[in-house]
Amino acid sequence: RPEVLGSGASLLPGFARPAAASLLLDLAAIAERAPFRHLETPGGRRMSVAMTACGPLGWHSDRRGYRYVSEDPARGSAWPPMPASFRKLAADAARAAGFAGFAPDSVLLNRYEPGARLSLHQDRDEGEHEAPIVSVSLGLPATFLWGGLQREHPVRRLRLVHGDVAVWGGPSRFAFHGIAPLRPGEHPATGRFRFNITFRRVRPMA
Ligand code: MD3
Ligand code: FE
Image 1 (cartoon, helix red, strand yellow):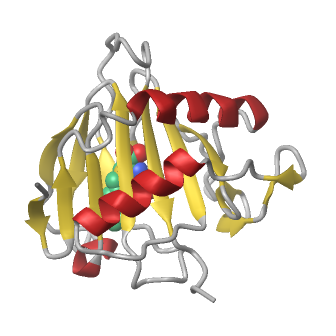
Image 2 (cartoon, rainbow, N blue to C red; image 1 turned 180 degrees about the vertical axis):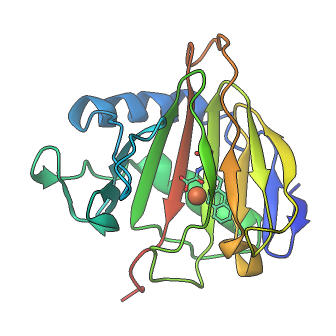
């Protein structure tokens, strides 16, 4: 039962819980091939969130800017393929939120350690604006900051816990959002970390 957060935005509490163990196994295999790393912002700051990717395209940031790339710049080879468990969960969650036919071509994996945060931003490096973004929270809980379409708009706080899935489409696709600094803790499935998996459609469907 999706909970409608706003126009085009839905929270599916616990939707990924049944799949969580296999998602985490697949995540560990991806991280073995393409390790989590702290990217540099165009302004030269090291991100506190560690990231990696899988699928045809991966999000990357360095001094030259933000962009999607088909090879992992750290290794000079393709990103690991998208596991079937990931693809299915993303499509099922999108369908449950009213977005049938969602076929992501990029998966960003975020790893939060205590104190790691993501400051308020918009996701606008994707060319395909009709598709939603699907996000899966695993491990330690986090406070999601959900703003409006302009940076100055008021920010709502939403607690995201292990297994929660959120689908961001329609007008909510370009809302400002972020994650408050992670509180230290211990989670049975992920230890001292929170992981977030976001599914994106970057290139138009053929
Ligand atoms: C709302 N990640 O990777 S996921 C990101 O928990 C990112 O790691 C956060 O923001 C995290 O870009 C939040 C939820 C999310 C993702 C994309 C959105 C919410 C969104 C795009 C538009 C509106
Ligand atoms: Fe984002």
